[in-house]
Length: 301
Image (cartoon, rainbow, N blue to C red; front, side, top):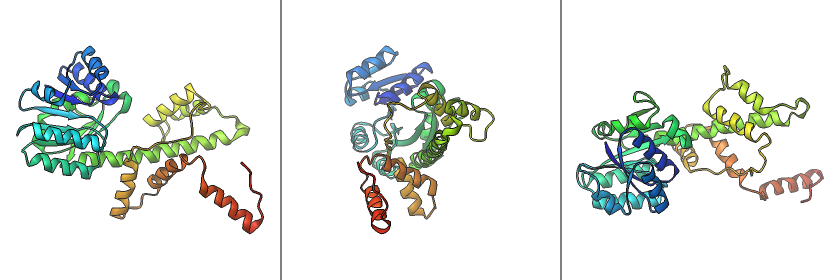
C-alpha cells in the first residue's frame, strides 16, 4: 500500500522503516533534508514540500501525520485540507488533544476528506517490537488502512484496534499516558525506599531482575527500569528533573470534569511539576513557618 509519512523525526522515521520492511511504499516529507536523506537510505522516496508530496501520491491518497501536537499539527492538517481531494484520508498519529482532533476532523469532513486519529505507543522500541495503536474514526476509513495498522502493530491480529469514532483514539492514548505516569511514579518511589535502606546495601538492579520473573509487579516498564539500573546503578549524571508531554495534565483535567477521583495519576503529575523547582519557595516557606511557631532550626543554603 502507498502511504505518505509527514514528519520523519525519530518516531515517524521508525514507523516509516517498519512500513517499508512490511512491503509498503512510503513517500516521506520532513523539513529536514537530513531526515529525508535517511528515509531514502532505508528504501523510501521523499518530497521536499507538502505540495510535491501530494503530487507523488496516487488517488485516493493516504497520509500519516507524525509531528508535534499543537500549532504544527494544526498548520499541517490545515495545509492538507486545502490541497487534498474528496476521498483522501489523513491520519494523525501524534499526541493531539482529542478535542483538537474532533475539531480538525469536522473541518476535513466539510471537504469530504476522511480523518483518523491514532494514539501510538511504543516509543523507540516500536521499530523492533511493533506499536500499540488506539484508533478512532469511521469504520470504512480504518478498514481501508488495515494493512498499514497490521504492519505497524506487534502482529496483524493484536496490539491495535478501532476503539470508536473520531477523537476516541487520542482520548484512549491520553488515559494510557496518565496510567503510565502513575506506574512510573510507583516504581520510582518503591526503588527510592529500597535505595534509602542503607543497612541492607541492596543491589537495585538485582531486585529489579528478580521482580521481572514471576512477580505480580513485572511489566515492560520494569524491564526498562532494570536495564537503566544495570547500566547506571547510581543514576549518575541524571538530573532530578522530569518533563511531561501534556497528556498527564489533560487526563487529570478530564478526571475533574467527569468527577472521577484519580489520586495516583494526579499525584504523579504534581511530582513531575515539583521536580522542576530547583529553588522551591514553598519548601523555604514551610521551613520558615516551622521556625516561627516552634523555633525549629532552619538549614542555611
